[in-house]
Image (cartoon, rainbow, N blue to C red; front, side):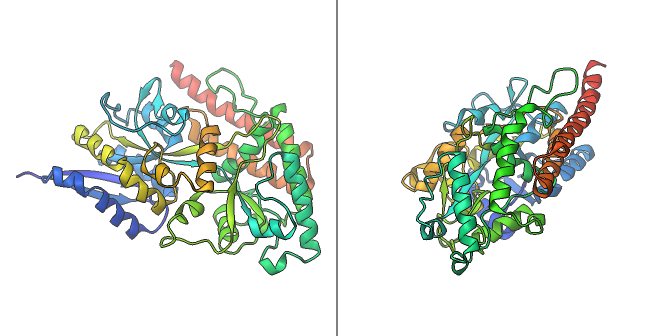
Length: 417
């Protein structure tokens, strides 16, 4: 009997061997139904995945099934790399309407949402309790600034050091997408939004007057919290470890991965009493970052029907129950995970956050636009930390808009040719 090989590329976020073992166990029922099929797994780090995918597709040796970021779908679909999602594809209801939107390009679904990512506003309960504050009472920006002031005073009086807390919070000014994801919720809650990128002319994005309210709040938070400039130079992932593993900060905008993995103590336990709280409301409410990853099938795969059946197996709600806790990423669709942990307060906050969240633009050049936005936001944040809100911050934003406008002009020229 001729064996059929399906090549599958995924991007692990934690231990590679544990990831592979989990995937092999989860796809065992699929392989039992198809004894003539074997799966060739390739685990790739996110920071090199795009380059590896492009290289493989150009060489004609790309995978049959691939995990991609939500913002990767548009450029890959634009290049004709992704197969259309079959009309009879089975899946549960999405946790939020935007989940079904991010898999579409020009009205056609090109993937299935797998795991999600959004903003986590996390708080150390013990630190707040020492100062007789409710960690879940930070309902507005004003509440947060008042709390930051009390925390800063508590640090100066030395009453928090015994808990290992050495700073109010941390903000990442490094010029990379993770910085944009962490800062965008504050900017959006202040009224900022990303305009339509399909119109002619230079867009007003980081130089927009709508940035001012969010920037003023961030500047106040930096000043009140007395952020350490040198400590801010470290990578956002190191900041997250400092928070969850070392307890150095009283609160932080971060990832959900540690809190989700802590749902299974045998996988990870928290050293400090850290809880998720609703994102403090700005003048325009709460607009968390929305992203995640999709499972797609290559348009060049010779086994598309089998590949989509494998995708269905990887979306199985019972597999997702353990997979989400293993990876620290919530499932994109309702099912066993959400049912099992429905009574866990942090999971309730997570679901509400996902439903409030808003994804970035679906555009073929978004990866390049996002990279320039991240660089601009990182530079603006660093300037805020050094000099406060000044004309320099606005100038940085305007220059980023000029660069993005030139980038988009190349795209418009190519589309018109």
